Amino acid sequence: MEDIEYNENEAVDFIMKHIPKEMKASVKREVVEYLLDVIYDFYDEQGFFSDDEKNESVEFSEQDMINFLTDRVEEDGRSEEISEELIVEVLDGEYKYGESKGVY
Image (spheres, rainbow, N blue to C red):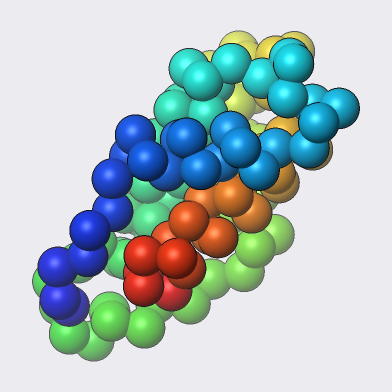
């Protein structure tokens, strides 16, 4: 897998800009950073970060990601603060950022 210029700070900025207006006022940067960390944990568990060539095209469903994030948010006691709607918006923003960088 070639090196991809994925910058977490840029990703957070990108996601924050793309969160719907009605949610933007209540979303803190720290929450987006936390969700990105959980997304990276999901990718890692799926083998996405593996150097093994057979894992170059790892596939998983969006619903699996949502379930993973929702479960982790609940385990971490943050479900009052982080809704499933926000999780979906952050996943969408992370995907669009990754797409703009050639990750996907």
